Amino acid sequence: MISFILTLKRFLKSLWSAFKLKNFQVLFVLVLVMLLSGTIFYVKQEGLTVIESLYFCVVTLSTAGHPSFEPQTTLGKVFTMIYCRRHRIVYGLNRIPCIRNHNETGKREQQQQNLNA
Image 1: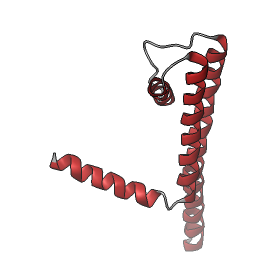
Image 2 (image 1 turned 30 degrees about the horizontal axis):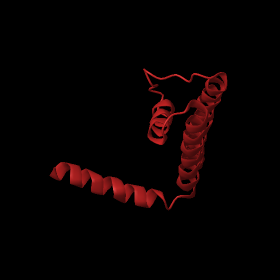
Image 3 (image 1 turned 180 degrees about the vertical axis):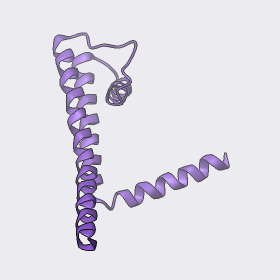
């Protein structure tokens, strides 16, 4: 139990410091909007409860998939395909700052090596 509390404390501290970063704030809002839009759609279109819809959205976005549920309507199936692709786009946006920082670091190292040579 102590291990869980310490881990939770570290997680919350990290989350608090992450919220100070603009990129994290934007991605956090995007994920919330995706979960909210998917939940509303599945409640209205597929007749699921709010908890079932939210669970389906989280499982779908985590790429695990839901073994016992698939949308019954054509519109639901099309929405799910687009919903999954939209998640990939948001995930890609998350990777851009990492790639940019890596490239900038590489350029600085190259410039430093050129100056030392």
